[in-house]
Length: 399
Image (cartoon, rainbow, N blue to C red; front, side, top):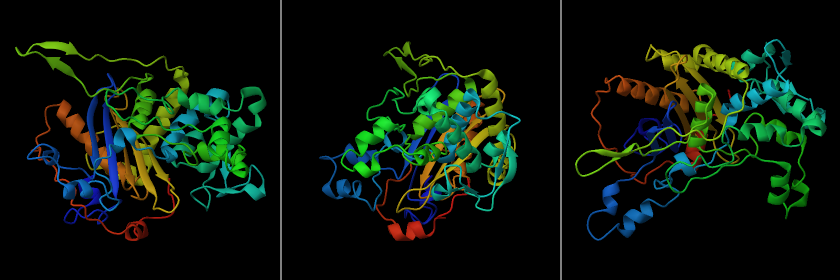
């Protein structure tokens, strides 16, 4: 992440983005193999001498340094962007608004809620005719707008929060219960939430069809942490939602293990196995058939993986890149999720970070991680201006 964000003399923004976070989970027991945020800080500043100096404290708490003390992995909340389509797509399969044979036509602009409420696919030229799997692989927004319309048109029978209730099964909108303090719960927006949130702005308070079609593609008011995203993808990969943990074991003074943390399943993941199979196949298609993603995996040359890209639009800022993946596909071991703030398309920013970390985890598991582990320097506090960082970031989504 340091080489992604600050490759030149530690100056933030000389690469892609201004901050980043990554989480790597063991999909079999929920243990956190790696968790990192950038920019970072030097822990020695808080240990030696008479305490942290005012100069260092100011450096760590300024907008220009991008707040190195902030644990983005568990407390940073982000639009999930198209990584969210794995979960809303499963909801569509569950309620019959999608299947393997149904076909949609993407013309680039969607007017399903009326011409006055037109919404663009990220590919404004249109994807043409496509089925569900291809809709996930190319991340076609039109397919998912149609899914949102299915939920909206059938709200009298299914309820106003049917889609939201489904994605909550994967842990969104609730704590993962990780054994760390300061975890954010994110947000799954509902009509009730919006009415309360905008209670002082009544013209914004009504729940509109566009709120649902934005949420279905991971935009709008949806918020999630990188850890929630990793836990959600671990559930897709294995069919189980596990509690993540950083504690592995406790030993006494004799070196004997007296406490060993075991896998803990958080409730039952009530999702049709056949639908999980369909979604997993589509996610495998992203890893193998998306040009930028497949190139990233090809650099390591040995992984049959599943993945999903995402590019979140944030008002007044450059696009945020997101990515989630797991491998091996047939027997998932590791899940990795990352976000690069103002990094541009997820396939070109967060994807390389995730694939690099995934490869390291796999090599560590095999006893082949031979790189020397060198502490990363703390933030210099130097960065390009917000305008410069935004200017070098694509303002158009491509996933």
